[in-house]
Length: 469
Image (cartoon, rainbow, N blue to C red; front, top):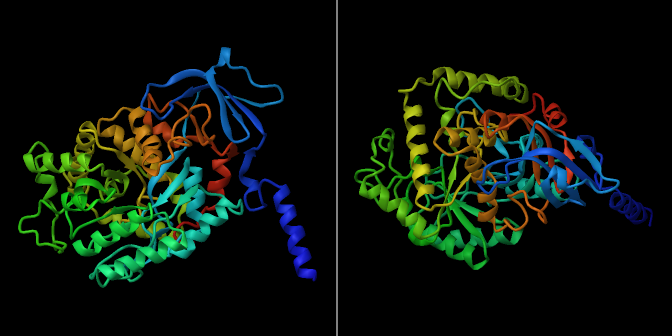
């Protein structure tokens, strides 16, 4: 009888405290009502910034938003005077992982269940959809721990294990044996609680079709990093989202065979004319079928030996071994404006701009894989900077990283923009990213459901841990 009584009292104690000891040290603002005064607001709709605003947060929601001289703080509210700061919506990361390359050229990936949720949150990512899982039970349990207040991190949307066909490069992936196996896999993991699926490079037409039909019957969307199947073919099958954009689309490969991932497509995409009829037809087909594209520019940029800029926080977060592995890969990679990586990045930026101009829904995410240069959270911020480099205004780039992801998830009525009535998922930035987009990295405070998290404490807690766990 002693154990049940103990469990009862422990449960009651947790219910009486908003946050457990695993989360509370990272929270610096926990008042029921908070007023953020004299802030600049970039609201996530793509509209220009508005200066000198006050945002009133009441029990986790935005109760009021307006000019500071006409939006007084309620009596008893905790007030924060934030002149010189900018508030944007919490980032909705749409290609995130809880794993990271192990280094040494071995196709194995270590789960980062401790460090990555903290890195995402510290960077302003308040909602994150994983872009494929290698340890789906770990990912699901991390989500449950975050949701129950036992560990810090963003709101997680968990994608099931990769739907990969024969020829996987990673030992941690299951290889589908046919359409029936695809159906069984989707049914099993849907029942376990995943909220999306990701098709991978060697999936067959029949397997992808079966997976999409089965997922859609359960109201679950399917995305894909494809190679064996081109974008237009996937769109005709009903896929909801395609990862990475033009750089992975093999439909333009000469002699492309059905269900076969070409052995070498290097350099082909860079030569494509985006004004050519085939590329225009692909963009039109994606827009017509309401297929979103996920921008993951930061992971491509990392393959340029001269990019991205090296930050001390990046070095501090990694284990020495992981840092050494990345810097070794960076040193071996060609750099400069004429490097293959630079050319590919320019082409992808042009494609994404053209896709949005044609009416397509562009979303974004970090994809912390590749050679290790795109780290959780940091790469989400870098992606916003790169979108601006590609021609989007800062307000548009922030919209892509916030409201567009919320729209894809069906959550735009609750998150994704700064508006009265929505959840108080907000990022306070020191500076003005509308004038200097690099200020997007200067996160001062992160609100998730109205609680304010300290990014410095979160980053300090994972110093030297990323790459290990």
